[in-house]
Each structure stands twice: as structure tokens, then as C-alpha cells.
Image (cartoon, rainbow over the protein chains, first blue to last red):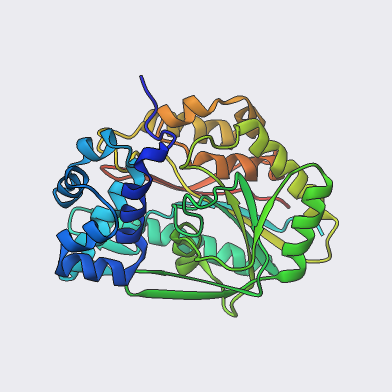
Length: 90
Length: 263
């Protein structure tokens, strides 16, 4: 069995940087939600990676070098931004 | 001063911001366990809380990935969703840990400016006593391979204990993380709760020293990469027996809250 959390290959860096920004950079996330295509293109992603990220296609993203945790938390933060009323805050 | 209190707490953000998929009663039971930790902290009258946690690629992105690090600024801030946190940092203690850690052969990274990760502030949200205490954030890399080995984490915990015991402050130590969970993987819905329960039994028996012999591969397979923060704490508490305050498995996460009575 291969490991769940593996070394992030350098080829995946631009993708991981975008996932990190979707997770942690509120301004980037807002810009992405307004215009995902342009935001990711400006961040240097090619069409294949843009499509995988916009679909939040985990298997595809991992195959392209994305870190599993970043995929998870970027997805959760997008959901928290787009459907905030579905969460209970303590 | 010897350590005055030691705890391990979960930090999963679903405990702070609950999605509809998270069982509310389970969340409240974990909150009650946090409440017990808060009471124990208050009773132990610490001057400072040293929190050992793994950064979730928040303060440290791929620009630099330290195995072990100490935050030595005067304050530290972090954010998540609508939550904003700022904590005072116990700078003299943080600096002593850094300098003496280096002296003892641990090549620590330090930072005076980074975003605090939720692994630190989720447990503190629920457990910080009044009046609030300063903290010392201690980082162990858990998510970005290659991570430090369990043996190294345990040895760092032992060294940390030596440093803290020689200091004048009353210190509470808190490990943040775990237990089994697999965020972002196809095993997300299948944590290894058997591993968790067997481990908790070992800790209750005071056999935490054995965790130094675990391998990184075993931790990854059990969904317990974050257990490195516990292993660091176990190096510091030695043969003290754990008391499990709660073990609450959700559909994706083994929420464990544990105290080590040190008196």
C-alpha cells in the first residue's frame, strides 16, 4: 500500500500553491469564486489543471501532484464560503 | 519548575465550524471534554501553555518546511472562517526552548512572523483559562513528507522536558492532533479506530515510551501522521499514566482528549 501523504513533487507546485491560496488567502478565494478560469490562468495553471481544480476532481488532482490535505481543505473552505448558512459556529 | 499539566486534544475544524454532516451530540461531547481540560488547566495554575502542533500548510507553505520549529515573536495571530485569534507569546520561554534546544543538538527552525494554524487555536478556543495565558507554539511537521521520525519526536520531547524543568515558569504542555483520520484521501470515511483504542490503552498503562519505536509508515497507514505531536509530549511526560477524558469517533475522525496527571 502506498502512503496517503506523499512528498509533493516540484511539478505540482503551481497547483499546490493555488490550493493553498484557496484554503488560506481570502482575497484569492473571493476572486476565484467570481472568475475561476481567469484567476487560475493568471496563477499559471494550464487547461488540464484548471479543469481538474474547478471540478475538485480529487483523483485527478492527486495524479497531478496535489497534496491530499490541500485538496481537502481547499474544498471545505470553498463550501464554507459559498454555503456559510449550512455550518454551525461555536 | 516541573511540568504542571499535560494534555492531548483534537483540533478538527468541524468542532469549531460544524457542517451538517457532523453529528451535533458528538461535537458537544467533545466540547464537554475540552471544558474538563479548561478546568484542569485552571486548577494547575500554569504561567504559560506550550502547544505542540502540526502546521496544516498554513504558517509554513512549500516555501520552507521545517521538521521542528519554535515561534519566538511577541504575539501570534491566525484566522479561520469568521474567527480571528491573537495570543501573547511567552517570549523568554520560547527563546529558551529555541536556544537550549539547539544546544542539545536539535536544529530547530524559528519564526517571528507566521500565520497561526487552526491546530493551535481550535483547542485553545475551548480550553484557554481566564485570565488568558501566553503560549509557546512548537511545530512538528506532520503532513509534508519527509516528516521527523517518531524516535526523533520522542527525543525532542525528552529534551524539551529537560529545558522546561530548569525554568522558573509553571508550564502546561498540550499536544494537538489526532487521532485517526485521512483528510483528502479515499480512506476519509474509514479511520483506524482499533489502532486508536489500542494506543490509548498503552498510554493509560504508562507505556508511551514504546511510541518512539513506531515508524512513519505505520503512522501514515493508521491515519495518525499527527500522532507525532503526541509522541513529542510522551517524551516529555515519560512513564506518567494517561487518563482518557473522551474518545469520540465520528464518521471520519477519532476525537481523543487525554490528560496525564503529573502530581
